[in-house]
Image (cartoon, rainbow, N blue to C red):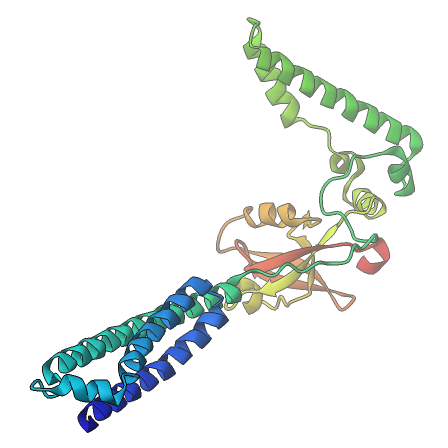
Length: 304
C-alpha cells in the first residue's frame, strides 16, 4: 500500500511540473489569440490523465486488501500502468515544447509584421500649396503676369488650334483606313516637334512670373548634397537655390538635367545660386553634380 502511495505521489509531482510548463503555454496561447480548441485539447488531455490517477487512488483500502491475495497488490500490472502514464506525460511534455516553439515563432513573425507595416501619415490640406505639374494656360493668368492681352489671345488661340489638330491626327491614325496614314504620321511628328510652348513664346523671365501667378513652382532648391560629389567639393550646399547652370536658366528639374548633359566632360562652367537671399557664383566641372532637388516657388523680388 505504501509502495502504491509513493508511486502515486511521484506521478502527481510529474503532473504538477507538467502543469507548470503548460501554464506558460496557456499564457502564450492567450496572448497570441490562438483558437480555444488547442487550449481545450491540452487541458482535456491533462485532465484525463489526472482522472485516471485519482480514480485508481480512490479505491477503498478494504478492496485493495481483498485483491492483494496471492498477487500481493498486483505490482506488475500497476507498474505497467504507471509506466504508460509516465510515457504519456513525457509525450505531452514534448508536445508542449513544440507548441512553445511554434508560439515563439508566431510571436516573432507578428512583431516583424508590426514593425514593417507602413504607417500612412495624413497631411492637412493646404489650400495655398503650389502645383508642380502644368496648368492649362488662361488669359487672366497671362495678363496678371504682365502679358499684353492681345498677345495672350494670340498665343492661346494658336495653342488651341495646334492641340486640336494633334488630336485629329491621332484619331485618323487609329482608324487606319486611309492610304494617307504615312502622311498623317509625318505631320503629327512635325507637330510635336514644333509644339508651341508658353516658355518659348514669353521668354524665361515672363514665363517665370506666369508660373508664380498660376500657382506653379518656378525654381529648384538643393534638398541634399551627395558625399564627395562635384557639388560638395565645389561649394554647393543644402538649401541653395540653383538659378543658372552655364548660360541656361534653371526653372525646373528637367532644365538642370539637360544642362548637365551639355559641354565636354572635364571642362568647367559657372553655376549661379541663391543662398540666404544672396546671389553667388560657383565654378563646377560639367557633368553630374550629385544633388537631390526640390521644386519651390520664388517671386521676382526674392531672386534679386
